[in-house]
Picture 1 (cartoon, chains in turn yellow, blue):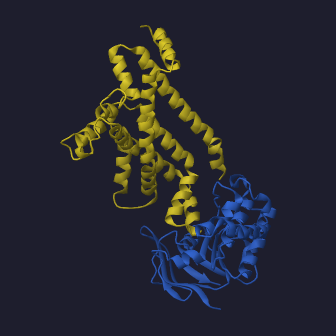
Picture 2: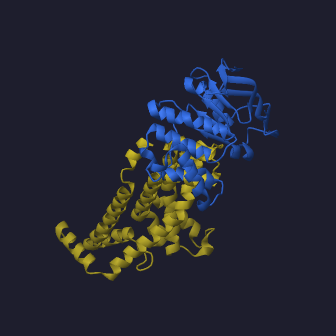
Picture 3: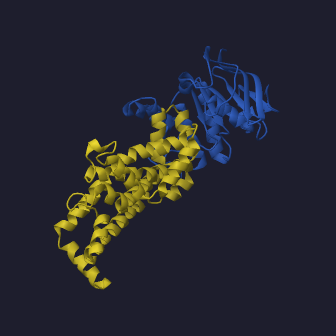
Length: 235
Length: 217
């Protein structure tokens, strides 16, 4: 099928309200967003902690956080598969080939992205923010909230990058989710499957959705950021 | 006049280099001091140590006649000592929120803090900037907001790092005019500075860091 015809069919599928197609999109969004929402508080606090406190092994923690960014998701999938399989230590959860299993995978995949971006944002922040907060009697908790507010655009970028990584990954979702129709079939695993079957229109339609999500998320970030870089320069 | 803060054998090193070694550093209650010394003498570092923002060695610390230590920095000193940077940074909220920041951080309700913030804005002459974007303030306005942000906490000891540096004309005069009123309010003030007008304020004692030692004048 020529590319143009496939793309035309893809748009037709999308606008026809194909239940299977939109079901896949829904599963993808749901598992990615839940994984991200669970990962964000943990990872942002971790990134802040590593950036702000001096402790033995800090450099190793930074190194690991940054190295984990390039960890193949298929490897994370393999590790989770072994942990969640019936003989594995977490087998009792019965999460293999289920949406909670995929969410766990998305959680693990999102953590390094969020930690590394938050770490970079907090490290780049003017140290006077934290010092002013401390010198005016703020508790450790309030200093953290103050600083994270000041670097909020960096944190937002972290969250959006994390979302981009989890919604576009295929290896872990395939291994842990098993690509079960209506249950664990996500956009990316469906693209892989449809392409292997020669159903390019489905693959392209799902690809269009992925690209649209990426454009929307980044557009929203740009709108929220406004003239933030200029404002930072004046601070 | 009673002693507010006394530190024995205060020593600060940067790696192997000894920045200063002060046998006894003492600040009286409700008195103003200017701290002078050449660039790199350690004036800012000393203020930051007093504010608990930098570590240092000390043989003994007394604050309000109570024995203390510099590390971990005691809560009693945290509540009584406020430090203002040479170039104060503003949180990206509003001027009013910046001034009330410390009050809210110390657990005061928003409603209670509002009245204090209003008074402090009036004192610093920044009422018209209440809802302004703090990032767009001039250097002099930032310094006045920072002084109001500190004063509203009614500190026993206020540490000002070069409060008039990089200010000129009316902005500098406005800042200088605020300082005696802080002393009148009962705060001890230590200002690291070279400004002759600040050094010449009535009743201000002069401290000088020279070759790693403190000279009292």
